Length: 78
Image (tube, rainbow, N blue to C red; front, side, top):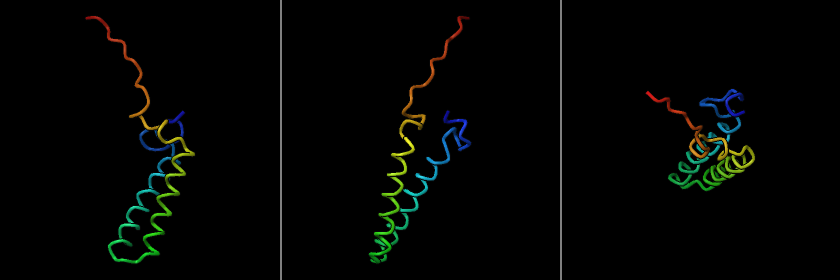
């Protein structure tokens, strides 16, 4: 399932690409906001929105291990 996709930490590569798009969009938007270059800011916002849409279609929140139930381990009596 998720571990078979070849991504790091058992997450598919598509989830990493969506995460990278959101991170790059945040950095570009922040630089545009600091420098008061509005086209750069809106380009960053567009990348962030594209990353969010990508995360939705890759079912990111279902794949992330923090939000999936952990398997129950049986403890052997000593």
